[in-house]
Figure (cartoon, rainbow, N blue to C red):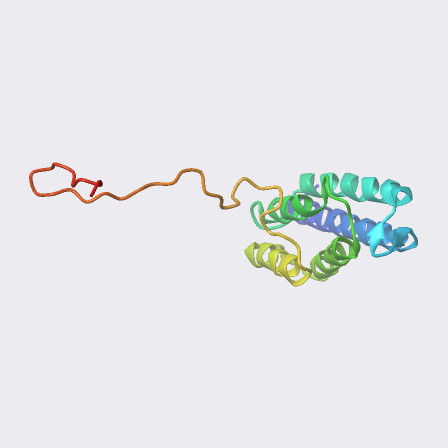
Length: 152
């Protein structure tokens, strides 16, 4: 198989995975009650998560851009109690990717834009969430390096 045929085959596999995700998301609407996915919808959730794993392994896109998109998506949906925001976020991302020929850094940025637009936490599932670990006190030192007295 020459390089061009391989590229076409990889692109077709990518498109099929996007279509499979969108099809599964079409099945989840029946399981949304009071804005949350019910326990009966977990089969659809599991299928979406499995397709995301396949998409992660797909060699399509510029560099690791597709992998980065998938990791960003997984940070929002894996081990989460899905609600309408998660479903709409997934639809936004995969409708967007489905019509793009090039998956690159702008695709990763768009994924995070969709995340924020749907009110999801872009730090969820990461170790980069800011938090205070230690507190410090600044103390003035006089010229001869003896600390000033803190008592009156």
